[in-house]
Length: 446
Image 1 (tube, rainbow, N blue to C red):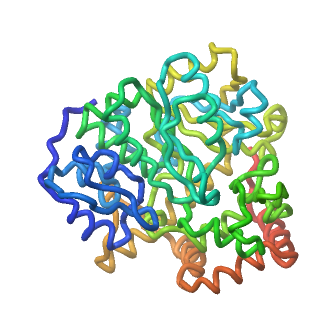
Image 2 (image 1 turned 135 degrees about the vertical axis):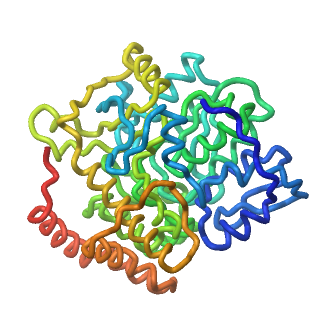
């Protein structure tokens, strides 16, 4: 790891004026978690706010990934390697397809349950004392929240993906007064923040043993889940639980009412296609400028393994997790996983890279490149990644324009109309037509 950096003496006002107000804040929660004086907190729409007297220590600005993520420097720091923008997956030593033997953990997960399974294993083995993860709010069950889970039951209660902006790194402030080592489950922007923090606050960084990253195409604003529920005709007051991928793999938006009724919001459209619409309606501005789809700087990163994209032996590996092992810590952890006997692990040959995952990564990068060039041309705020941003083609610009078309209409009534159509028979028809189009135009198969 590089030498400790001395933060510049900047106040929270810098973040407010240059990051938060221009909507460059990723809402990762790091500024709240790293503040040594505890004067920051999370407020409406998951943004940080000042709740005490700022002493301009500069910790929050030094760790913020909103405006500056130096990819070449991160590659040297984390991998002792150079950064290649053409490598869609980032630095990967080995890919795996895996799942826990415990069917309860596997079935509760969004895509195989490996994140939950690994955390449960590490806690049971005494390798960690807890994990920073995302769960659902007990009072508003369609809202997400950061959790410091210290028992197996707490970890398993937070299983499954949460597609909603959640400043879970704010939980790091709890680690300052605790002993032990912890794992952190993070989105790509949060991984960037964690790696920046390692150079600024060695004391807090020493509490973190593993960084487990999640694949991320986009995220959703905090009002996305509740508007989806309301568009389906379900009163929020009747909701006992909400799952982003409930009802069996690959899952869908799933509501459990207080009377016990279970309602999938859309059971005839694949989850990923529902999410493509949700991202267009609720994708945060900063997410559209992010170039990292696969948590490229995590120790291990995790995502869906779409078995139906493969032929032969791989086709049978449904409901499994695709794992990207990136660092020495990740290599050591996967060794533990394989020796434990609690998991089924298949190394994935380099020639069998999942094309759907690569296409998602390419799409996210191209979308960001279009937005970054537009921001630079218009002298608008944008994150600096410190590598030459490839110039997008006309076709890529068109794809991004169509992606952002929905976002240009800000009214709630428009979003509700789109959601009502999505969850209707007309939405199913449109989905089937689009699926046929993809089968004709896109070859996913390895």
